[in-house]
Length: 437
Ligand code: AMP
Image (cartoon, rainbow, N blue to C red; front, side, top):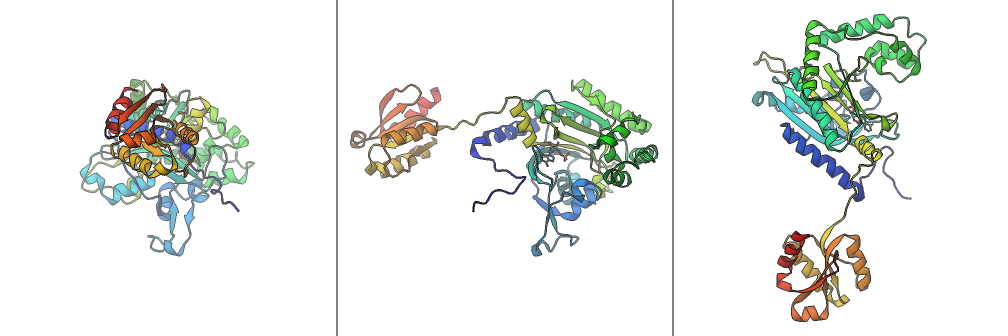
């Protein structure tokens, strides 16, 4: 019986790898422009890290955490074992605290790319293993509203850099931790008595994480929520001023956005600015990425520094790579993977195989992408077919004459032109011709 990859995961085959490389290369270049350095953290962490950061009432922790149940999980700090990381922010903050990055750096600008894991019910655009590109700006120097604007602009710039357009950016502000508390109380008071007829899920959200009701997908719940006039009533004067400055920064950079007072984000740790970018063409799973400010998380995870009076601030985002590729596909903008090879060496006769093998090695030593047919004496024609499949620009033919005269026959696969070249000069001559292509 054939074994398939687990449901909700997928293999990235060589015919699709160019699409991924394009995203990764574009992202690396842009991150550099904005001063971000790459950080790589383990794909699993102590389960406690996610419980403490994301919040026990969140879906990601409550229902979707993929925990590693194993005798070998022994040694995790709170004996709860390990969990595959469902997102990148908590691990980055853990590393920031663990290595005390704030001691050296006033502002740490970090980015990551890699797989994340959530035990979701798989569907289009919703996987159990998916990949994110994310960025986090953390430090005493990360408290400026213009940094919020810069990060949102960077996120938008990335999507545009990948070739996407027609996506929508929504922003909102939850205010300070204090504002957020008031907001939750106000929401509970407003919704009291109005949600009794709703399902258990909504009732439980009301109790445990009332913000989740704001972006509920339940139509009955949506109807109730739509009657609320939220605006920016929950924001204190300072919170309001902060949000105004973020918006001004975005305007200055020409970033187009819509303010949505129903946007809250599911995770506990957000304060102040939150944002989400969606592409309608993706249907139900339309979020390409999201992010926000999470000032309190550093201290919540044991960081912060008493030597410095300023609070450590933090702001970041994560983009879903699979969804970006789906959106690019929908917009007809996926890059086609092109195979290419500088030169393919064809053995004129099966007994020239060893000579062919040696020549391929010489060509590679000379820095050329070279290959041969390992088909044990396959016909000349088959070898040429293989050369074409691999996208070879040149084919070298090793025949009796060439071996006798220490030469090689070089065929330009684009023009069909054939030349005889001194074997010792093959690398030099091919490199010269390749440069001209
Ligand atoms: P989140 O951490 O939930 O805000 O996710 C950030 C982005 O990651 C989302 O906007 C999606 O693009 C992507 N994402 C989150 N969960 C999944 C999933 N299960 N499958 C595929 N992409 C996901």
